[in-house]
Amino acid sequence: MNRYQEEYAQKKMSAQQVLENIRSNDFIFTPMAASCPDALMGELQHLKDTNVENVILQTCIPTDYPAFHDPEMDKVLTHHGWFFSAGLRKANAKHLVSAVPQHSTSILRKTLDRIRHEGRRPVLLTTVSPMDARGYMSLSVSSIYEMDVIRAGAVLLVEVNPNYPRTFGDTMVHISQVTALVESNRNILCIDPAPYTEVDATIGRYVASLVEDGSTIQLGIGNIPNAVANELKVKKHLGIHTEMFTEIMVDLIECGAVDNTQKGFNDGVSICSFTMGSRRLYDFLDDNPMVLFKSSTYSNDPYTIGRNNKFVSINATLEMDLTGQAASESVGPVQFSGSGGQAETVQGSQMSPGGKSILAMHSTYTDQDGKMHSKIVPMLTPGAAVTTSRNDVDYVVTEYGIAWLRGLTITERVQALTKIAHPDFREWLLAEAVKNRIW
Image (cartoon, rainbow, N blue to C red; front, top):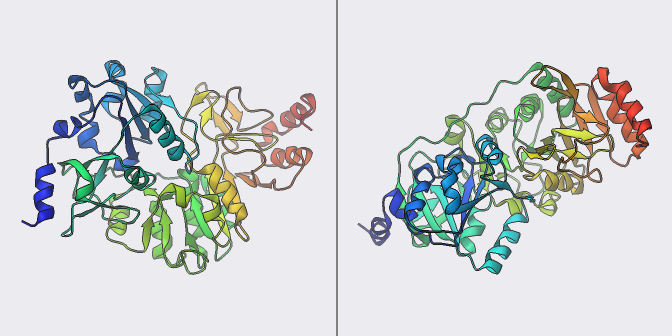
């Protein structure tokens, strides 16, 4: 047994023992999505037995855990959500979590400023791949802010799991940086790509028509980005610089559409910050030096994005008003998801030579009573959070076409957006624009 293995053995504990390293007033960071350490998060209620109090727990697209829905945990910790998942939406309805308005490139800096001001100690709970012979483990499927937290001096509590891929970039942590660890052999969260509809496919074709050969692409989460990516398989010399590395990106690489040769920045490699998907996706990423996981302060920085050639950001939105304001994270005042990197990728793409920003959405939605509503509206639903400013919006795509809003007046925007709204709502939109003096 070498000295790294000895140190590893000394730090190995049960999940509850690892959690007993948390003190009152700590600020706990958790990683993105599939990287959440289930072995530790599943035991988080043990903190009720350790007499700690005034702890803050910060999560970002987490899977669901009993502690999120336990009212008694309110005596122990306050839960902050940077990006809501289904479990957090349920917890929010019971006032057990509150959303933090944020941009992905600045929220960590602002949070660390507050931690220092309040005299709190940062703690990171995360999952890592097994240690190598030199004492290094990989942060695996998420490096969106984890390495930044570690470099800020966080207490590092980890779940070591052999089912997690070893990835490269801002991912390598050494056993000497770890305070305590628990071993686990649970399966990594696997999600197969959801089938998309013909409406999604139509939107995908419109979006793909805007992507030139040699473009660098960023795709968001959801059925529409998956449909877009499927249409991109016929393109040539694409590059990847994205927040989330998705399943369909494996297809684009393997079919030859992506070769990362014409990015003009970080040529030869794909850049991302986190991933979540199928076992096939994780196997592709395992020990793959051609995909680099970088902090979102790098991957989502508009100035970094702008150094790529023909950068195309493709994101979804929930609602848009006739001036171009995009509400992508809330339904009225009710938090649904989060800002993520949308605003920054929208700005960065337009700094790129030949770059384009695209917001894509279905033209309508159907409520619980079966009534159809337009997603393009005269004014946003009261209380809705504006994720992308009308000052930044560029291309907007629905199943009815493309509206290019860059440089247009309000009057021209009303006309362009009405043309890609569902036909049943076009006269109403124009009438409302006149009635409310929007144009």
